[in-house]
Length: 117
Length: 114
Image 1 (cartoon, rainbow over the protein chains, first blue to last red):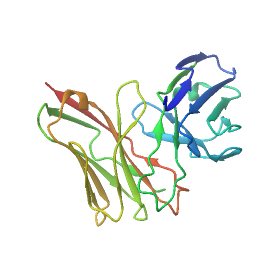
Image 2 (cartoon, rainbow over the protein chains, first blue to last red):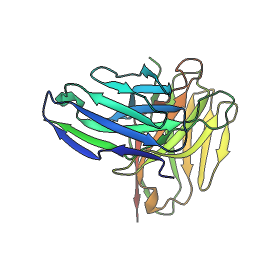
Image 3 (cartoon, rainbow over the protein chains, first blue to last red):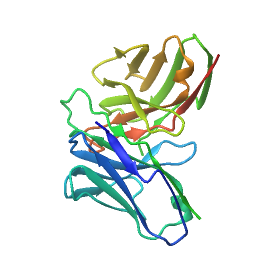
């Protein structure tokens, strides 16, 4: 199993350009997440999805859109990139989070380093 | 708002010594806690977790302690090795309040001196 994969690994954009980050998981997980990580900070949740065809906002959703057309894929879009969106983006997935489940960990991809000039 | 934080942003230990990484949390309703390890240039990797009805859990060379009275979580690494050098994050879930989402702390960088 490849686990969680992300495409691309690196990208440089100019202000105003658009792009889509692709996340794929082969673990049949229901839940998927997009985070951003800035230097010296923890991970902040951008958007998440609890199932195919559903998405929800996280802590820092502004400037991003997402889609979950297939269970195994979660796409993160930047319609008009800004320098403030320079960051490392991580995708994660998990089984359905429930109180009775012994383990509710998320599995992370390797990250996408995005620079917006 | 509720947050998870860390007492020490950096920790330097000698190879072979034990390491203790601390984490304070403010949400008394949090039900579940995880420690992640993140090596340079990689995604976070699950280390160990603990439910709020436990106060200690052990894994291979790692132990997590939970003190709900003072809302404190710690990760103990026995016989620290150079491969343990990484940033360690604690994270929490409040099943009733955060839709099951993880709330991450800022991380502690562990450096192991040979």
